[in-house]
Image (tube, rainbow, N blue to C red; front, side):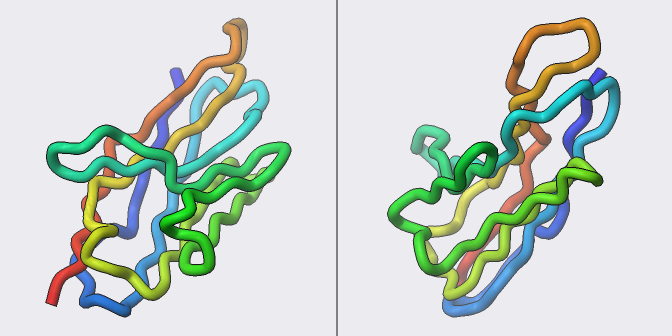
Length: 118
């Protein structure tokens, strides 16, 4: 069993900052990549940022968001600055990993709400 637990969402005014964190635990053999996705109401889930062999950002967040990963602790964080109303969404942590005895698979957190509003 693998669990991803997120924290750090909330309500913030435009221009403000939030930091999301995610910790992976359980029967983990090795993590290939971790990242963040988001889903706004009525829209499909989209990639925000990932880090593994390389780091990738959605064009809409480049220069404002920073992803960081602690391999020793199996955690990933997303520092979000200069937040805009269009960043409002449920943010999901993702880990692509090998669990013990299984093949490479994607695991998801439960999601954390980020609301940017005045």
